[in-house]
Image (cartoon, rainbow, N blue to C red; front, side, top):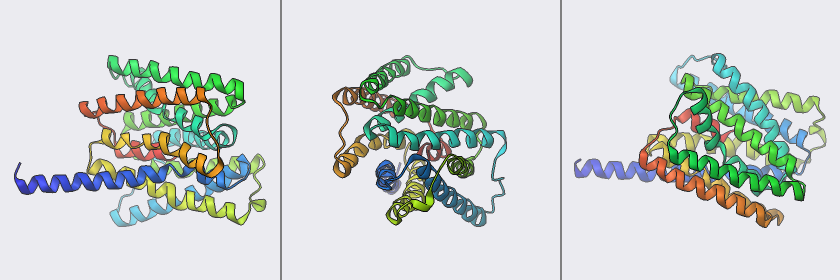
Length: 306
């Protein structure tokens, strides 16, 4: 490698780090912005889903016009599966926002890579390294501590919903890995369908305060689409496992924002379980980076929209 090439490579790596760090940090504001809306779960699901559907659709139209791609809005059976999983994930995620602590929620959602590994083993015949099995067992143990604590403090249902979100996301990612299809626009349909369900089950957007509309518009039209786009750009400049490490910012920063804004702290038992999950995923992520296991841009984008 020449000196000039090395400088370009170092510059691209720094660019990738900056883009991904900004995207990962923006992503940590998802739960706080949803909480700041100060509304019920169905209104939250309806308004946020509507904004996300608009943002993703506009992105698709712009991308289609600029690049001339003519992929269908729902890309085959893979797109249909992602619509279903995203609809369920939207409903469960925003219900969990109102039914458990933010720390419990992000600790459990971090289980997603573990579910991905198990599903890849079951349905894609991918071999799981023994250290990944150790990570699976350890992370599940940490989540069990959190859920068991939820039985005592009343967050059990919300904790189980968070497990459901992580599982739905993992199913979607497994489908993407199997088919290789671009199904990003299915997230728009899933957001819209979940908004329709919420309206049927009692959403009351007409009583949502203007401040609530503002927080959710900021979340659905700007923060999550921008965070998703920046993280999806990451693999162009960084190894994908290095990009995936930035998802751990959600586990660390989201509870801090919630504490600063709402003075909400997790229980000691939940902190212990979360620390086990975080440490396991961090160590496993470093191992993945060293072994250079790849993740597609579509997988990273789908992971950020829940």
